[in-house]
Length: 242
Image 1 (cartoon, rainbow, N blue to C red):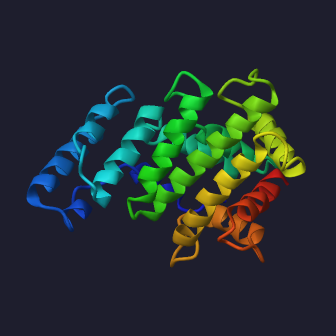
Image 2: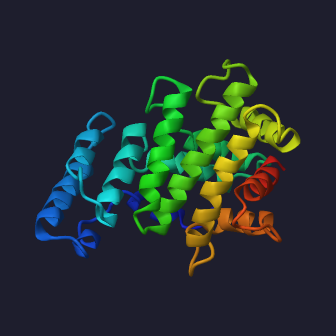
């Protein structure tokens, strides 16, 4: 069962308190106002909140940016997260793929490539927040959207940007069985890069961000050089494909 699901509704309840550390009063005020803006933001207005922290390079500012991108994508608390995490409460063999199909960025751009760009940007923002939970979400959004792109490419662009669990599994299987084909090496390395950095921070440091995913990663990465993106990506993809 997916651990920590009860805390999901709080994922965007970021307060300005954490931002008060290591930033001046002026920046803290901006972050506080941006947080108040996010508290009321909708899918169409979250970008305005993000703009309020332009030029501020603190964990609090990156929390605003990370959260704003998720809200703009349509992860308004807590329905879409609940849909994704509920996949882990089923007995289905493809629950990981179902989770990934929900976590895929599909509304932030008008093309698959644009959605990939935003998912990558979101992961970068989330990784700089210092929050295990947000780093975990950024990793899964990026990895899931990469899988969606793989499914899209595998079907010559006919799968759209919302692949289902079956299409995600087909993409994982293709990456596993044909690691040197076409753009597969770049996709595998990209996933490996994101997973390796996030895994260290969210699974190996104190309490894990999410026990179910961390258990999967622990199993997949036994004996794997965590500093080798290609090896990490291949190991994780093989695990998820199975």
